[in-house]
Image (cartoon, rainbow, N blue to C red):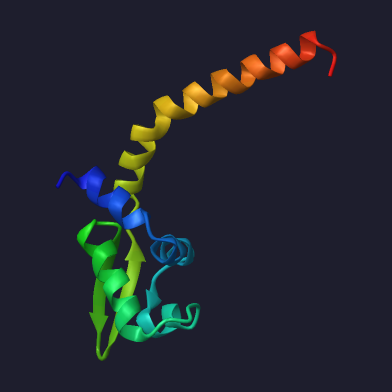
Length: 105
């Protein structure tokens, strides 16, 4: 599966998107991440595995703890893929604005 497809698949889960938002603030231990969720630790570990395999997070072991960090490169690739669609909707919304301006709404 291409990297962008793996990233999209990983981003499909709200829980995984929440993990990525948390990691924007910097690396976190699994226990720290778990405090933010009402799921069992094995479920969180599975989400982290999917994110790791998609290249969206990296894992570092320190003693008995595992720390996860955000890896933004796959997100850049997703953003680049989405750019044409963003332009499409921007143009549609600009057209709607122009129409509404003409009609004095």
